[in-house]
Image (cartoon, rainbow, N blue to C red; front, side):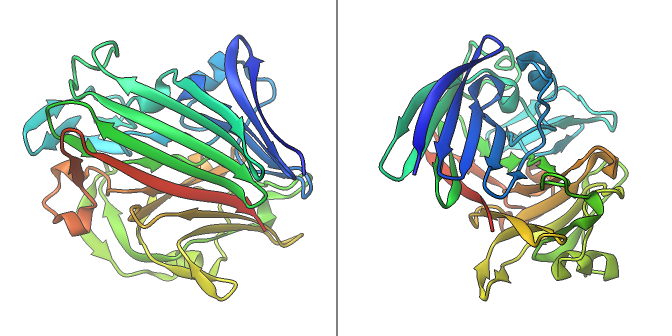
Length: 333
């Protein structure tokens, strides 16, 4: 089995190309440690939205909607307000609805720490240290280290993300992946053949500003299509469907994640996340652009500001010196 981890040039920026058996992946540290591309070459599966004509600058300008970006902080903060136990911060409002959207970590150029192999895997490690050198620090002066590990084996991509609070303040901890999956994801496939299975609990009702009303709804027939795996995630507009995560079942075993299936070939993308993630939000940019985003979130939209318990909202903070790691896995079946 061919295994390699190689630093390569992409438009003047360094990437890490990982190869392990049928899987290949490109890690773009310059674009917020994004998985710029991942493929199962044996089954002709292209996991994430990519554009062969894009330059590095093009990818940076579209960081949320290509590949596999990690967001800190997740989704929206109403009015740009971030209430932490020891301080209240005012972020700029950068979306048309009057909120702060997506944070800043995925927009930074990160550092490649390692490109290495073992007998069974190709590995890339990247990091970003957020401190006074970052232009956002005057707004949010809470230093931290973000560390990413991408491990490609014959079982697919294992991903871990660690944040460490390097400051003397409380660090609000919320993480999300704005996972931009191709639809269709099979070479020569059709959008109408794609189906999405998402094990979900109650629906999170959002207001006109895309902020939770704190009213949680039982699932209607539309929502239950996610449970039955009959949702077509492209070709129709899916505009921020948000749900509590639940554990489902795949192949008779517990499964905490989503499954995308090409019904013409029965080939699948399986995307598993650890149970630190509490919510799914599904979005597809009006459904007409050939991709869809099943986004795992560790906290609910606007969690720091909502009158919800921590168990409901997923809100948490890291004390000075404290670290937390989340893990995910992406593979074909």
